[in-house]
Image (cartoon, rainbow, N blue to C red; front, side):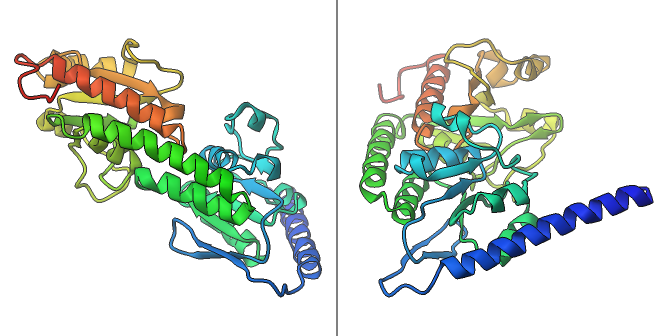
Length: 322
């Protein structure tokens, strides 16, 4: 970095710090102690989030967080979002404050949020520390189980003062998940390899919410016991695990779509069960990868795919609970 570039970078840092400091001063003046009871919930990081009154200006720093806030009835309160926040359609018009990993702190501060919904493992911790240092309330959203989506809806409804809408959305979502569980969870197990990325080859362990979806559908994640949340695995390990189905997420994929090129590459191992039986499935990434109410649709698609895998067994139908 040249001396000129260092000076420019320094000026940018000072500008952001000045804006942050100014916001902190204004927030302190604008938020006198309140006599009524505070609103308090526990977020997905296990931290208490307390507001003196319902949030009126919310910034959501992940696409799934935007979906959750809208579903919880807070659409009119959202004043900022990150890139790829495109659902519901109204979210496309929200002011952008960067991406999941590269936040525009100055822009966030300028929006004067009284609540920021953050993605625990998706947003940069150093940038979140800057916001936290100002006393801006942060709600960490990272549902790890299917029911945690409903828990987040209710918590956000509490923080935004939209409890009735949030409770209704949570009840509707839970009913859909319960119906899928009643229909599929007891069917004969299907071993599943979930491909997150092809190069390097990455998957998910049993503590990630998609693993819970697989279990809901009567599936078994073959790498559930690995330690990292998103572990890197070798092709040889997948071949040795010999999954009955291989699943991945793809933008806009629909039930019955032809496999993606990354999945087609598995045809190099024709003796692997998933390949031999044609059980290479792609699911719309917006439905399966975002832990928000539409995950129920993604779960339904995954359940249908695993049922196809059962039907393609040499002796399908004998013990599958149909």
